Length: 266
Image 1: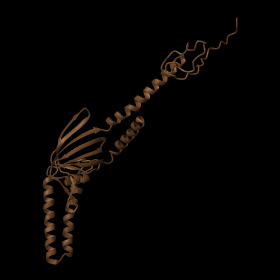
Image 2 (image 1 turned 45 degrees about the vertical axis):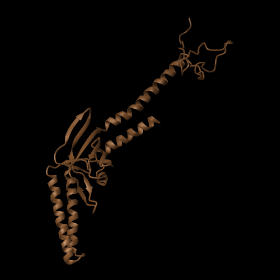
Image 3 (image 1 turned 120 degrees about the horizontal axis):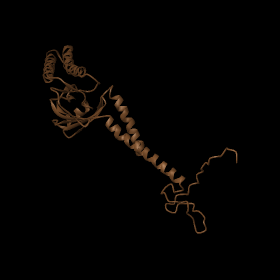
Image 4 (image 1 turned 135 degrees about the horizontal axis):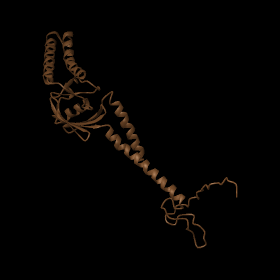
């Protein structure tokens, strides 16, 4: 059972490893006012923890919008871009409200202005996606590179970044203020080697046990415990059908082929 599970896990890791070079896979969850993001990208598993969010609802929205928190886009003036987008959006919403007061709630120009207010946020999100090169994913955006270090094949990263979320009022995409995060990267080959070790060890032990049993049979020993069965019997000289030590059935005698002389007799 353990061997079968290990083989299944190895197959799953290999599949994710191959898939991670064409797309980013991940899952995220919220706990209290923090979020955890687990994803696989470019041949590595990434576990990212972010917080402290203002409340649990914000944490849930961030987790729903950022399954893997990868890749990380470094954009120096990103907060200024977000401010400009929000200013443009607010201007369009105010103008739409003004037109509705003057011309009525069904005014087409007011509807166009409201649609434009939604579109500016969508354009920012699409622009971030476009600038994040490499395997597609839902990027988080940082104003500067994070603190990156490597040890024993693992990658550790700390920094601050803006996460994609949704405005609870209208569902449009928005980016949070810079929030601290920490991430750990694990190459896919590490868990693969870990889960592959057990089937290999089990196969080696099984081969060793089989060889031991064959050697014991040839020597007239009990294949299970190694008890000498060659001179084992009762007082009348009849051999026991089972090993007196462990109860294993006596194996059939092994036929030994003797060399045949082909030369003429003298």
